[in-house]
Length: 162
Image (spheres, rainbow, N blue to C red):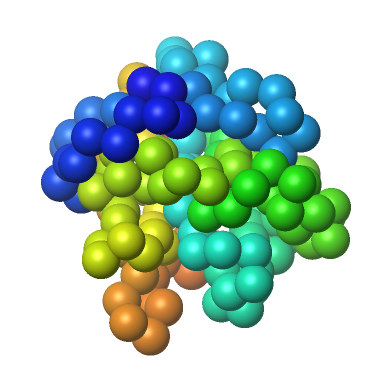
C-alpha cells in the first residue's frame, strides 16, 4: 500500500492479518511495516492529530514503556493524522523513540477502517511478527482504549505464543 491508497476497509480484529503499508515517516523517510515481518512483534498506534491531548498522553506513555516493549521483541509504530513536519515536531516535542508515520491524507487510517465521517479514529493493534493481530483496541468517544502500560504485556504474551 502507498499513502495514496484510500480503499475503504473494515476495522480488523483478533486473528486478522494486518495490511502491510509503506508510508512517509516524520523524518521524510519511508516506513515499511513489511520490514518488521518475521523480525518484530508490532504495536501499531493510530492517533488523531498532533493537538489531541489524549493522543499525546498515549504517545508519552508508550515512550515510557518503550524499553519494556523492545525487551519483548516489540516495535511501536505511531501513525499520526498530520503532515510530516507536524509529525516530526510531535516526535521531537515528546521525545518519541519509535517511528512516527505522517498520515495527512488518512490513507493508512482508512486502510485499517479508522476513518469515520472524514475524521481519523485512534486505535492500537498488537500483532505478532507475522502480522497476525492479537489485540485490537479502538478508542471510544471518551478516548478509552488499551493503556500504554498494557502494550508490553501483550507483546510478552505474543512472544510466548510464537
